[in-house]
Length: 398
Image 1 (cartoon, one colour):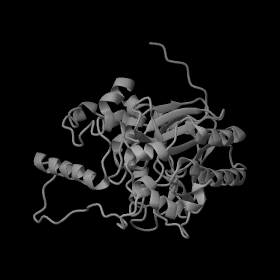
Image 2 (cartoon, one colour; image 1 turned 90 degrees about the vertical axis):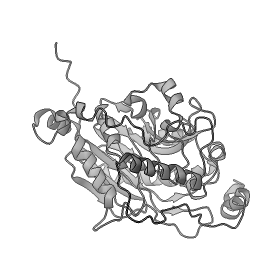
Image 3 (cartoon, rainbow, N blue to C red; image 1 turned 180 degrees about the vertical axis):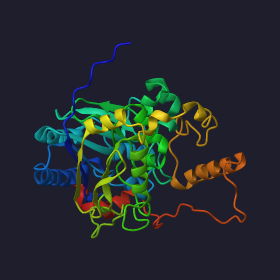
Image 4 (cartoon, one colour; image 1 turned 90 degrees about the horizontal axis):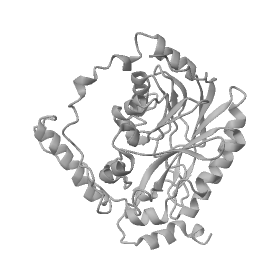
């Protein structure tokens, strides 16, 4: 069989990750406050680093557009989908698209967004890429959420998702393939807690993987910084021969009236090369920048030339074929009903733990102690409208 034509060589370029200051929002129109800050930081970052190498990727952190209001206040899912979150494409991606065109670069971002083609009243934690022409060229949904996130994921509406997109890994882990920056895969935060996520992207051709944001204590465990988040991303890079691009969320102002931000993410934004080495790092989170050269041609040569360390070539796939035959987390949870509150969802995770014990996967401890549970930050009985007026009053009349 004749060889396929060789791809065009990709020139080295600079990838930039931004950790921007964030304001939580109570209405979609308030996103503009975060966009204004993002735009200022993009102008500053490009002017600062583009003398080193052409900037071809600018990556934003999770929460950069909206903050985490829905998670913090445990907002009803359908209400948050209607009042807080965006459409992709939409006015927010158009704003970022103008910046992508200005600098002839790709912008990678995250935002919770409606997917009306899937379900009318659901939002998904969504990763997107805007091309140098200002258009959205990639959209993917986060597949794993932590226990305090109300977002829907494809597995929660699995039958509908498969009906639309099929059940191949490309339906859940799509990869953008380009001639000028290589092949880009996107996951988010909790997705990266599972080695299967980056492996799936790698099987689909990924060479650079965007994984924005993680929270403390995962980012602050140990010294000098980065915690288990950085360890995971170095492992993803080394096991799969991919670059990992990992900006972290900046300090978060809870609301418009907040006097001080809280550094819930703990800094430690970083970029890891395809050998697992950290090539850029920032402990700071206050509108800070990480930047590193991405050499796609070198990655491709390493994958093709090495007989060691390019591990994927050695994988004995048949050995693992039956490992996931028994489900752990139930699918289709939110196909017919609205995603539940944090306290209710705790019960689902507790059932998952018991399922692993019953199977013999985990051994139960000798003594049963009370486990983690949802504890709301306040319980003064105020309605959401009252909370909005108190915390976002100055912005509500805009």
